[in-house]
Image (cartoon, rainbow, N blue to C red; front, side, top):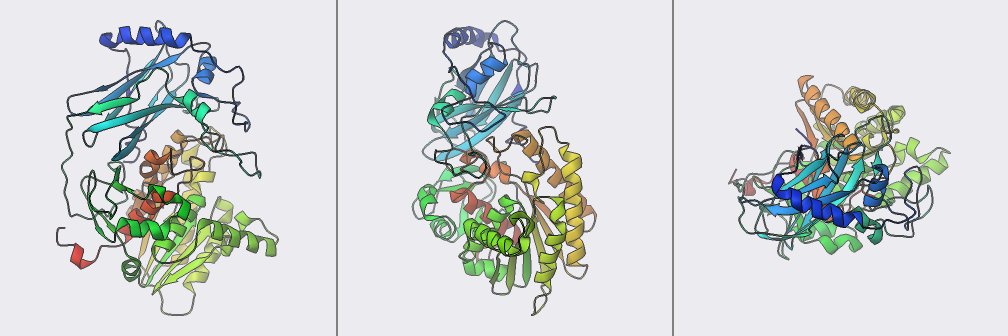
Length: 512
């Protein structure tokens, strides 16, 4: 099941332990005297960066009630806990409250997200250290009331991820002063972990599924060999980053994603081309899938990027006097050896006729027929939630089912069809008022159910690529809006996809 790092890592506390009660009282007393800005950001519109949210907005929404962090504390097996509690006798929150925790050391980057339901007065963030070391804890207030309780969710974070529509942003996404106010007040930020219950590794096995909930971002040596956890095979990681990341995004090149029980293969362009020979890979979805397509093309030796794809789309839209979103035919395609990759834009169900035309056109191209068809899709998930209380399961579920029916009709019954459904990324900022992390998890659940239903309906290979957990720990450095992730986060997303589609070369399989 998806969401283990994003949602299920939640332990709501009915009562703070008596040993911590004295600490809580002292922290609450200290926080009571903290002054708040007189003008706060309003959720109904975009705001200048000088207007913040964070604990001052939560205090206002809770009618003067404060929140503080107690800890962090380290247990005997290396698990670190941080309690976030409401102040006052029998204090509880009037709406649900979520807290996002980023964890850093010089060798590890990780994150978890916890949410307490309305009526609770405390929640616990629990994180298991993969190795001993000195860690920085950054607990941020995240969303207030994102469980669709009849009112819109309120974002408490420190970012203003978009400027006013159609205006160029001139300020950084994450405002330092606002981010400081988003931190859980009074919480400690440094912790030393000495004793760690390290996970048992199974070195040598290739990571062939799309699961990422058990992984961690690790720093490794300059040549890409070694790291805090897990191994790899194939090309040096630095080579993949050089091919896939924009030049100004390569500052995070030493970081890669690793799982404890398997190894990723870093495919050379020639290896990827050989694996995908006679395969048509169709990418269908919104900008998240478009970015995955562009990064995969670069890993396979192509020269496209997301900006070029959007420029081609806009040019075609202008020639045809249509909107860019209604012209998926304008997207670029890529051929490598006997493989063909193509992207079809889909933001809504109304674009399915255009998606069908794109795929049919590619499958009718002159030359030998493709032996296999792979569809990588999210069916426009990012744009399917227009209002805070949209019924995701019903609305997006029907859109996803209609899209899969259309794709299967175009593909026909004569060739094997593989399906990779890409979940939303870790939506950790307010990019549009209707979307929250809870909604992203619901969208991921719809896609997970669709993969299971597709297998039951005869699609032999239908799996889920979990981009949510993959990107969770990269909020501070790899995203401009909390939704689209670049740098090595994008490189790793395409790498996980290639490992799902391709077995590594025989010379690397001796340990499997």
